[in-house]
Image (cartoon, rainbow, N blue to C red; front, side):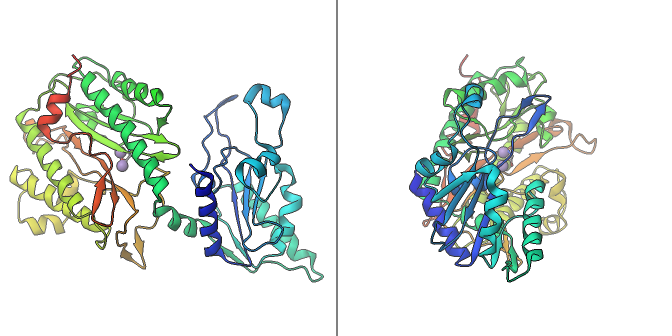
Amino acid sequence: MNPREFARRRRALMRMIGKGGVAILPAASITIRNRDVEYPFRQDSDFQYLTGFAEPDAVVVLVPGREQGEFLLFCRDRDPARALWDGPRAGPDGAVSDYAADAAFPFNDVDEILPDIIEQCDRVYYTMGLQTEFDAKLISWVTELRQRGGGTHTPDEFIALDHLLHDLRLYKSRSEISALKKSAKIAVGAHRRAMTHCRPGMYEYELEAEYIHEFRSHGVECAYQPIVGGGANGCTLHYIENNKLLEDGDLVLADVGCEYDYYASDITRTWPVNGQFSTAQRELYEVVLEAHDAAIAKLEPGRHWNEPHDAAVRAITRGLQQLGLLKGNLKTLIKEGKYRKFFMHRTGHWLGMDVHDVGDYKVSDQWRLLEPGMVMTVEPGIYVPDLRSIPKRYRNTGIRIEDDVLVTRAGNEVLTAALPVDPDEIEALAGSAG
Ligand code: GLY
Ligand code: MN
Ligand code: MN
């Protein structure tokens, strides 16, 4: 991401905060996996969004209009001994020279320096409840300021920072869209690779390995735990064991996406393990595809967030009714939510730096209006339970089709459109690597 992009974001946030405010945001912490093994460090999305600074033990402070500098960064000192083990750190000098901080200080000095900055301000923008250690620090600084007395100024307002920041993050800039497109392109390639290499008798994790191979070949990681479920496992929404055999005659549902430069893709395809849908599988698949297309058709500026979902619900309920899996009047079936037995999740979510990205879905209790620059998934599905009341040929079938879609001025752009959804094309791809 270009450094100018980070500067632009900070300016936008500072405009929202205004003079007299201070925004404080700590970086993500290192998490222990077991004993002395750490999880790979991944910067907090909000912190990354504002700084591009991907180290732990750091705090960004933005003080609009402050003469001695508006963008302050606290970070770890350089440490030649640690550098031998972990590689170099930017250090406060690097924070200024490489990350455009107006001033930077050692992380350990935050207790000394930050209270004096807070004292100059009327409003503190901070998100409580995410980093309990830092929450406690902040509370103790403010308490101390209050106790000092003798004309010490203390801010009189605490405002949730994430609310402002997440509204900014909801509207993707050109460079963000470009990163999302790259992420989508790599994930499309990975799905193609997995589909073409699929054959009965493989383990689900072998199929997962095809995705990982493609991702690591492009220097990217998974954006979330891959879901690769054959047969009935496709009905478990967050199935991540991925350790069963893929059986001839079953479908496999793969929900896998990557993270490119902090931007996620999130794609699901469902295909026949042996390369050919059974009649019952194809019938269900076509209903999901209709719902997918109906939802995307409703994705354009001026429509409410919920309209694509309503369209998908309608298509799925009608399809299930036509197959005899739901019985009764269409309107009533929708109103009473009978489709939820087969389709129990929402049709999509915002997509960005976080796979389930930030941003409110409702404003003043109304579904949000879609606007250009918003990016979301469209992911209807049908998951047929193992019930005797349902014809056997349909039971234990899980199907989801998930694409990533950008709202544009003219309507929308499906960022993952290069990956087929048509059942004939899916059949042609599945197992085609021989
Ligand atoms: N991969 C998680 C989701 O589709 O929402
Ligand atoms: Mn997904
Ligand atoms: Mn999703």
